[in-house]
Length: 242
Image (cartoon, rainbow, N blue to C red; front, side):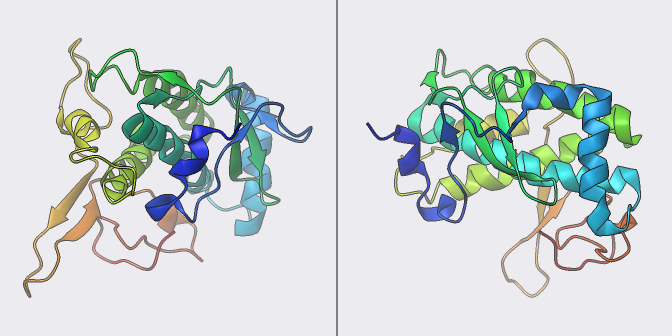
């Protein structure tokens, strides 16, 4: 029987690779290994070869952008469009890596379970608490970059895909509202700072065109000289960005 996840990869998701289900290929990496300093260091060192072993903070940030794009797009699409919670915890997930070392495809143990709640501060907990929180702590410890850099990368994709999914053929009106509510909260219900709070802002165009989408925090990829600045970088200059 086809997985319900396959239907998600249409419209704004059409260019992305759907997750694999069941037994991963032998070469796949258990995501929990990214929490082991030696394993994470080896992955990022391999990824850095294409950038002449550039600044480790920027390399870790750039690697995270590939990875977070894959994880957040899948997690949000299933959550917002199917109301399913994917098994994205690091203990359950496997990663198929590209030759350069970045995450290419997710391998899931199953196609998710029905959401237990509609609460926007709880429905994304598997993604935020079981994946993003421990992984970002490991990336920050390895690279020396602030955790805020990685949370900003996560928030950038969280906001981007939430808005894009409203144009999905399966989306109901207001499908992105739970994600917007989470991103708009300065604090979580328990009083902790929300690390996903307002990751981007939209700046008015002086000529009256579409508002310009800008990140609130820089992803520091400019520390790799051959890449420069992102197109939505909050700093003064900007070049095309992934």
